[in-house]
Length: 219
Image (cartoon, rainbow, N blue to C red; front, top):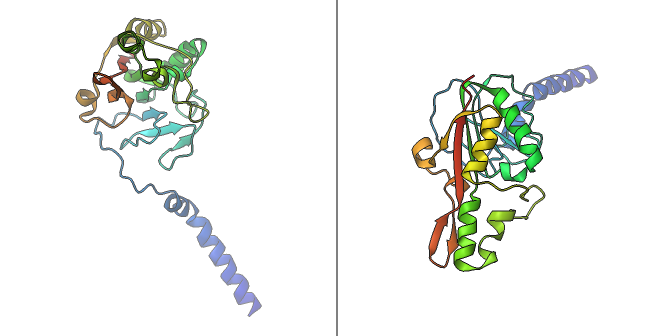
């Protein structure tokens, strides 16, 4: 009887080890279906700082342990990916969380990870629009969070500001080409619910506050 019990315990242990990762997936299953954005599958597509957004087919990297996050880290070295491997990188309202000194180094890293023809899509608060809203309404409460971050958790503080010319220059000096504005509805086919198509309230109605810029690695 003792030998039989020992054999049963060994069998149960073996089975539990075999199904360990399946059990983990079930425990962390996110019941919300991912947003369906169908794009050519010619390499990994990385969504940096997705927050609550889960795009079907994209690898989610975030500093917070959300259910749909595949890689939990606040390190943007992308060391898990080979150079020249990534087809697309998307980051919405993330770049402004880096200091001016960190931005170019980070963009260089992303450039090295992109394959030839790979695309980076960036969305940041548009300082030109934010400053216009303040000038028009003389109310700092309207723009303090878009400008400085929500400040409701440790990562949600802004360290840098951008208009099109400043962001274009950072992309240009770090190697990118074909730098231009992009529209979420046009590029993704839908609005996915993040700040790239987000608006804030003003006394004269809602207004878009994001600067959306994309660029390519062509060399």
